[in-house]
Image (cartoon, rainbow, N blue to C red; front, side):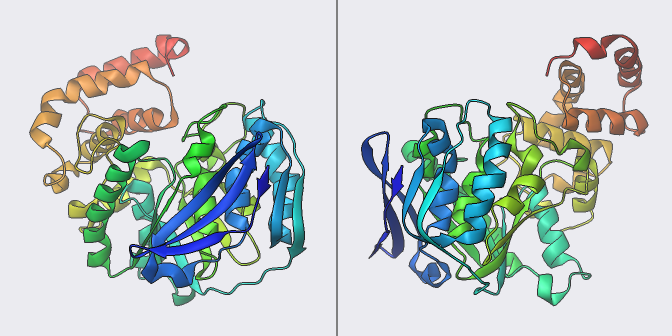
Length: 378
C-alpha cells in the first residue's frame, strides 16, 4: 500500500483533504472533510491515514509506504504494539512493515480538549465528568465535542443522510450546552468492506483516524468507554470496545493523547448518574435506528429497562413512548433469559434487588441461576 501526499481543496463551505492511495494494484483515495470554519483545527499529516488504513493493509498483507514524515511515536506503537494486538483480535490479519519517508518528533500544538459525542449514555457520562461536574478542573475541561461519519450511520447516500439528521438533532444539545460541535466525514469505511471487518470490531481505530486529523487544534481526545474494567480484554473475534483502554494509548501521538473514559462505571451506575441530571431528560439519545427513539432496538429497550428498575423512567416521557414500553415490559424482561452478555447480567442483577421487579421474574431468575446458565444463547 502506498499513501501519497494530500491534496487539499475548499468547496461548498467545506475543506476536503484527499490522500491518493494504491492498494492491491488499484488506485483510489482516502478523504476527510469538515466545515471550512473548522479548517484551523486540521493537521493534514499522515497520522490519521496511517492509523485508519493499518487494518486494511494488514488484511491485504501489504507493507505501507508513506510519501511524507510521520510521528515517530505512532510509527513505533503501530509497528510493535498495535499490530500484535490486532492479530490477537482478528487472527487472519498479517504482520506488515511501515515505511515512512521520514519520522519526526511531534509536540502538542493544540490546547483544546475534545470528546466524541452522540448524546448516548456513554458520551453523556464523559460530558458529565469533564464538563458538567463542578469538580472538573479547568485544565481538563472539554472545549469541543466531535461527531464523526466513519461508518456507523450506514452506507451510501442513506448513511450520509442519517449522519446529517443526527448532526441536526445533536446541534440542539450542543447549542444548549454552549460547546462547539466539530463534525467530520470520511470515506474510510470503503476500505473496510472486504475481509473480517464490521463496524463493531473496527470502530475504535476508525474514530482514532478521524480524531488524529484534528491534532492542530486539540491535545486530547476522549473516547467514551462501552464496558467496565472487568470486561476489558483481548480475545479472538471480539468486539473492539472491550479493548479501548488498551488500544487508544497505542494510537496516541506526541501531539494528541487518545484516552478511554468511563471504564470505571457499570452501565447501571452510568444510567443512575444520568437520571440525576435533568438536562438528559430532554437530550438523551440512545436509539440505534432513528434520530427519535424507536423504543424497540436493543439500546432503547435496555436503557428503558434500567431506568424503570431504578424508578427513574418517568423523567424521560418526552423521549420514549412509555405506554408502549409498559405494554411490552413483561416480554422485554422475559427476553433477557435468552442472552448472556455484560449488559444483560447487569440488568438481571439490578432486577434481583429492585422492588419494581415482578415476583415471577425473581422466581425465573432463581431457576435460571440453578438450571439454565449453561444453555443461554449469546
